[in-house]
Image 1 (cartoon, helix red, strand yellow):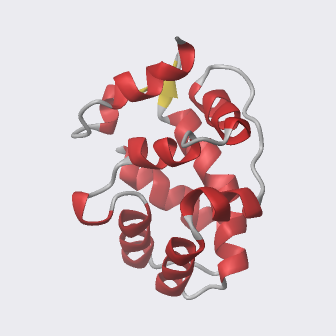
Image 2: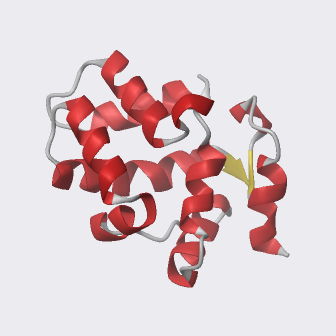
Image 3: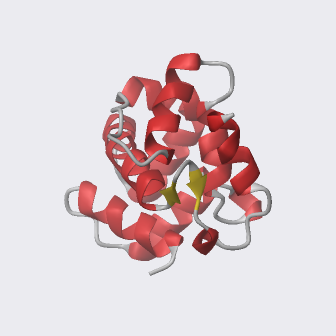
Length: 138
C-alpha cells in the first residue's frame, strides 16, 4: 500500500460515517501538498516552523520510539484554520471533527512512513524528504 492510500484509509477509519475515498484523497491532496500532489514532507515541515514544542512532537513521530500526541488546537495552529476548514468542507464534516481526526491520523501516518528519523523512500516522488526529516537528528 502506498503512502497516499495508507493516509486515506487511516483518515476514513477516524471519521464516523466517512466512506468516500475519492473525497478523502482530494481533501488530503489539498491539505498535504495542493497542486504539487501528496507531499508528507511538506506537512512535517509545517510542524517544524519555529514552534519547538511541535518540532519535538514531529521528531517523535519520525523516530522509532513512542509518538507524542498532538491536540486538535495544535493541528489548527500548525496547518492553519483556512486549510482545516477547506479539508473539513470536502469531507462534509465540521472543522472541530477534522482537527480531531487529523490529530490522530497525522502522527500515525508519519510514524508508519518513517524509520530512524527519515521518511521512507516508499513515499516516492518527493525529493529532499530524507534530508529535511533528518535535520531533526543532527
